[in-house]
Length: 18
Image (cartoon, rainbow, N blue to C red):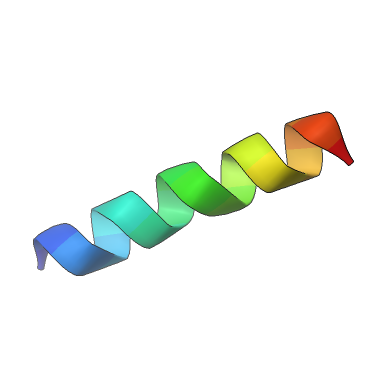
């Protein structure tokens, strides 16, 4: 499930910038 990995990374990026 590559999509899940990508989503997790995006969430981390969003949380980091938020």
